[in-house]
Structure formats: C-alpha cells, structure tokens
Length: 212
Image (cartoon, rainbow, N blue to C red):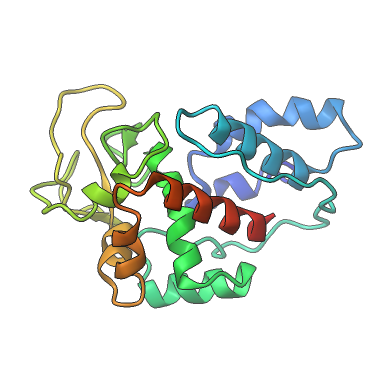
C-alpha cells in the first residue's frame, strides 16, 4: 500500500486505510533503507503495544519491496463466507482456522469506517481502546439491531446498536465475526478466549509471528 498509494488504498477492502498510508509515507521517504512491508509491520506492532493489555509482538525487518501492486480481491471482506475466508488465509499465509480466530483478537481494538457509509468510527466491542477478550464475549451475545442503516452488506445484528451520535459509540458486529464465532470449526477456539486474556494474547503473538 505504501509503494502504490494511489492504487491499493482504493481497493474496497482497504477503504479507511488512507490515513495510515499518509502518516507512514513520509517515514518511508526519509528512511529509504527500510522497505514498505517492514515499516507497515513495525507500525502495526508499535500501535498494538500502545493499547492497554496488548502483548509485545515479534518484529523482524527485511521484507522485500513490492515490484507491482497486489491484485484487487485478495483481502477477505466481512460479507465473505467462512469457507472463502479460510481458503484465502490458507493460501496467503498458511493460517489454520484457529490462527484466523487468534488474529481476530485485533478486532478488540478496531473500528469500522466504511462497512456502513452512514456512520464512522464504530467499534467492534464496548472497549475499543483496550486489548481484551470483550470481542469474543460480545460477538456471542444476542443481536438486537443495526447501528446506522439496517441490513448493510457485511453487518450482523449487534447487541449494542444504540448509544448516541458521534464516534466511538454503539457497536458494529461484522458478519464474518458472527459466522466464525458459530462455525463448528472455530466455535470452540472462539469461546476458549472468553475471559482468558493470557491465552488470547499468547495465541495472538504466535499467529502474528507466522504473519511476520
């Protein structure tokens, strides 16, 4: 994305990433010995570590620079089926279904910007600035409504759809999270992270090391 900032950030799955690209591009320009891929991985590790409760992620430099933009359509989207998500994650990084769930611990400190165009900065759980197991608890709760517009592609019923106006309020449940929490291949792993901070953190570190 940093090497081709006029192309890859415009892919539908990457909408909302432009702010990060704009912040990191000057660093890439001023530190030419660092590749774009290494800078992105380093920034992600630092950003996660700044959140209370987050583990320290392994970082290793040395990723080669891309020579051409990635094809569009490689990143799983929230409206994709579980089978499609598993196939793409297996192909892209040899991730197992359990490792996919571990990577989704990142949703405990994430927000939606473009899934629903009528609202912005909607968190995926009730504690969006703390790395904890709430995402694994709240996705299992009964959904009662949609924040923003109803029945947007990629959204499932949320347990906390209301909560005022502005940013960092209400809660969005991604359709993919909803499916993964209930799929027989991943439901046990999902439920196993509930109130198990250390287990979740260790699994996240292990999965991120594969990604590295």
